[in-house]
Length: 375
Image (cartoon, rainbow, N blue to C red; front, side, top):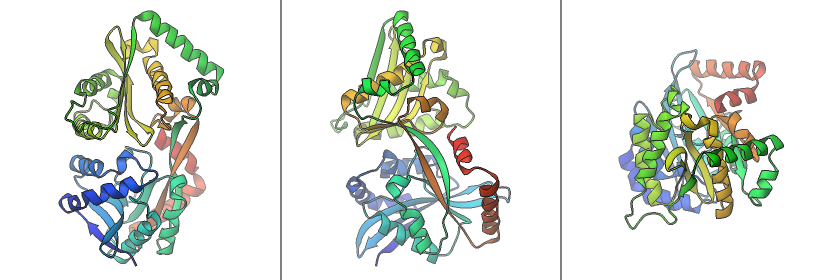
């Protein structure tokens, strides 16, 4: 039988760094957000007023799987709620256990949470991809009397890179194709257009510079873009986000996981997309363009050039990332829906929250709520 060791601080977790890496590399599907260095960096920047809960499943003395969690406090109409969830916070679109023994890891983790003293009001496992999860999460929760409540969490847009660019373009609407042709003609008539893509194949273990000039270009364009006026403090030009992503940029470049695209007009950078790359999948983290050139459609032109280049490179998929779903849908070949699986603690607040969810399911459309989170 598997047993679980619970880690609640980064110093102890560092002892499992190599184990984490080996378990991650065994997985047929994973993401940059499941890497140890992602969690370690995220926690140093955003772990204040949260509690780390990393559950490591062991068979004998051998770790076979890792389930990273965080305990955070969120507001509700019943007051502050203690929520135990994945440490993703909408940076990515999917999350789950680390390692190939995912069912066993989830089962051991759910049993551990059932048996230990409950310090949460809600166990809320969000960003669960049903295609890769294959019902593991709700099944293992139910097997441990945690009574999962399923609800769509967030919608996403993806581009499956089957075939070639021409076949992809033929699958877009006539209006989409005409608009793209018009914008490309317009921007090419305005001056010399140069598309630059930086993806360090094989990483930078030889000590090369991770192209800080391109990272700084993205920050500068973001500061001028309309997203800079957002109030959520998650835009690329926000000082705290710049520090966080700069640290991750060096890590991702060294490991061959960064993918930066810049569009220049007569030598001036006017649009960017900043992505992570892992196992053939491009994940769109942030993008923006200089509003001075909005009439030329630089964001649209850059995204088209990036997609066309990904076809040439043999990439498997582009995940267009979180938020702004309406503007991404025309580009997508498919839509994803992640789920949340919730268990409510047998406390007064837990019971009230469960009753609230019951009413919400009957008088509100869960898919519409997911659309609002994805907007």
